[in-house]
Amino acid sequence: MRCAAGAGPAALARACAGSPAFEAVSRFDTSGRRTRVAATLPGTPVLVAELAAVIEEAQDDAGLDPGDPLLLAAHADRTNTATAAELARRTGSRPPSRTYTAACVASTSAVADAATMIAAGRVDRVVVAAGYLVDEDTFALFDAGRALARDGRVRPFSAGRQGMVLGDAVAAVVLESATAANRRGAPTQARLAGWGRTGDAYHVCQPRPDGGGLARAIDTALRLAGVTPGEVGYVNANGTGTVFSDCAESAALHRVFGADVARLPVSSTKSVHGHALEASGLLEFALTVLALRAGRLPVNAGFIQPDEACQLDLVLDEARETDTGYALSVNAAFGGANTALLVGAA
Image (cartoon, rainbow, N blue to C red; front, side, top):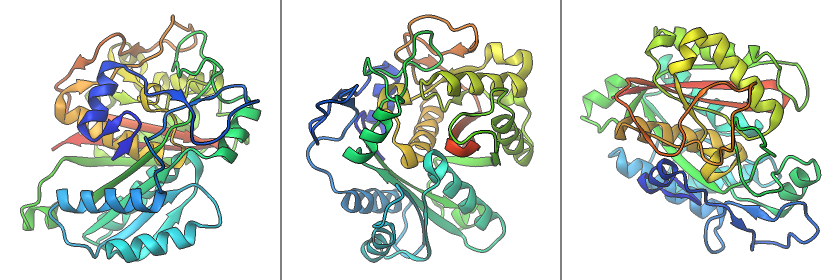
């Protein structure tokens, strides 16, 4: 996986240092915009080429030859069908080459579907890939909607937060059944222990204030895994740095974890790499896997001071050491869509 914060372990190291990758946008003209900052990859990356590269890297790391089904998450536009077809051709993937465009839960929905396909015995393994490169039209749309932080910083769960910052990301993971992986002696990074998806149907943009939808997604993931809330030792939060979303997410965590939320470490890696829309969930899932393997929890960067509506055990100032066996990566999207992926240590 690649983002402005780095590639693979380098991105985790920067997230653990709490060093945001936000800079003035040079890819297009931002004059006249309320904000001019994003987290972008260097140079002039091309999405198909970047995606093909991370898919091939994921297959190599897993010790696989091309030929597995591909599920792709990408920004909704008229090129999606061509992008999926070109990726399948370049990487040797086979059907179903399905594309997900469900906003900020697109890639995590793809992961959940891949896991379901494997659990049902339909396939042994699936490649899930996702990509978003900050573009002028989307930047203008979010800026006009006053969703972007004017100060150019993401401050999840902090008083004084002003909104999100967009960011580039491309990522790919290989999901494989335990039986198939054991049979070929495959290297295993982590286990997808559980997954959950829900819909609020509350508002086109705002999340349900009581966090009910996201809480149900988390509960579903825990029940599927047979894991109790007390066994979870970290949450990589959706944490967009927007007022309503952070409050609703905090409410969801309180609903699920109750009094235990006071000792549950929480951070949002968006505070370092920005919001990569359809690709954010897969990027954050990958970072959660890396954090679990490294035993180091990323910093919730940009924090100013506590918000009474977001009382959480935030990882502040420096990375926190952990030996937990389970971590959650959660995401939410416009329209009330919610996902939760429970990662178990390998």
